[in-house]
Image (cartoon, rainbow, N blue to C red; front, side, top):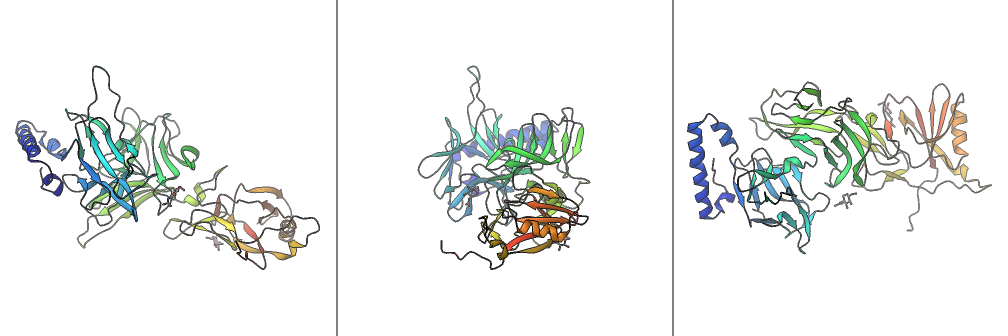
Amino acid sequence: MLKPNTFTMALSSSLSYYYYYYYYYYYYVCISFLLCFVTSAQSYNNVTLGSSLVAGDISSSWVSPSNDFAFGFQEIESGSFLLAIWFNRIPEKTITWSANRDHPVPRGSKVKLTTDRSLILIDTSGHEIWRAKLPAGSRSRRVTLFSAAMLDTGNFVLLDRASAVLWQSFDEPTDTLLSGQTLKQGSRLIASFSKMNNSNGRFSFDLGFDGTLALYTTDFPLFNTLNSNYETFNDQGLGYQVLFSQSGILHLVDSTGKVLADVFPNEVLHEQVLYQRVILEYDGVLRHYVYPKSTSGSGGWTIKSFTPDNICTAVIQQTGSGVCGFNSYCKLGDDKRPHCICPPSYVLLDQNNDMGGCYQNFPTQSCKQGSQDKNQFDFKVLQDVDWPLSDYEHFQDVTVEWCREVCLTDCFCAVAIFREGGDCWKKKLPLSNGKNDTSVDRTAFIKIRINGRFNHVN
Ligand SMILES: *[C@@H]1O[C@H](CO)[C@@H](O)[C@H](O)[C@H]1NC(C)=O
Ligand SMILES: *[C@@H]1O[C@H](CO)[C@@H](O)[C@H](O)[C@H]1NC(C)=O
């Protein structure tokens, strides 16, 4: 129960006394009751009042008794730290929770366990960046923080003197659920902004107070307001909580424990798994990852299940860009992940974020009366590409030649879409909900300036 580790060794000797006291106490309980497995499974290393960790201090973290999880600072880019919980025994050190994803802190920032101010994160200039919110308590029953502990489940808890839980990281998930964790009514996972940026992003997995469980796009940058849902797991709205079991099943239950919906079909783990997690990733896909126990060294994270099957066709927003950024289109790769692609003569706004959208890399067509600018334009043809909801005119029973010409002569027209049978749509910028899929069955004509590009002179 008390594996020596850097953390326990750092404890004062008077505290060790308490440890051994509890150890023998539990040992006694084990003999007395059959509950001994439960009891020992809940063993923990106490973090005492006044303890603190410093960002950038290499050996500085609070680990669980088994060493599976750690709480502390992780450097996400040079000189920028998250207060986080991570899988501590694998080389990836995968983060499962963080306190300050929108406000990374510099080296030297501190997290501190205080009597009067709870667990607080302060940056180098002494500003409070985050604190764990304790229950209010009452006159008759004051809430007083006594200790903290990193549990082997991946849950970090704050306890009172009687070891009752005052606050736990499991109640405030970021983008990940661990087995044994539940998602309660009124809580949600929010995806990261991008592959490289951990900030709150554009998608949410939400169990509403009305009991509806669904995946939503957010009104980014107001990531807490939900825009439209792209997958609903129950319609009747009786959902009470989402459970993630040890056997790898993620399902929604009602208040009596009856299963209303499985989030992933046919789950149940058969292989030997070291770790598992469910994460809503930056591309809007909810994925169940497992870390197989392999005899041949490190297994690494592999995908067990994911939903929706095709994120490119699942998401369609009345307002907002869709899965990919504005003016790009989404294509599901062989890896089943979405790839966001800029049309010809369009380029990424942010080279490091392919979901950030594209801009037209040439001067727009002149609308001035009598201008011959239209002669400078032509089309690039993309099969099975469309931007639903970006059209401002629709014609029927026309030819493809007519469709091209009507877009070419219209300075507002950025793209013409033609469907066999004579439908023609004019599209305006910015284009949204772009996708490339066999189900599209349309041809996109991207209007481009023949002698291309801007001559960048600032
Ligand atoms: C991450 O994305 C957010 C939201 O767009 C942005 O405000 C922040 O500056 C980004 N962080 C980094 C390190 O690029
Ligand atoms: C779009 O997808 C279809 C089918 O997957 C493919 O035949 C077509 O070439 C794609 N178009 C582009 C522009 O990639």
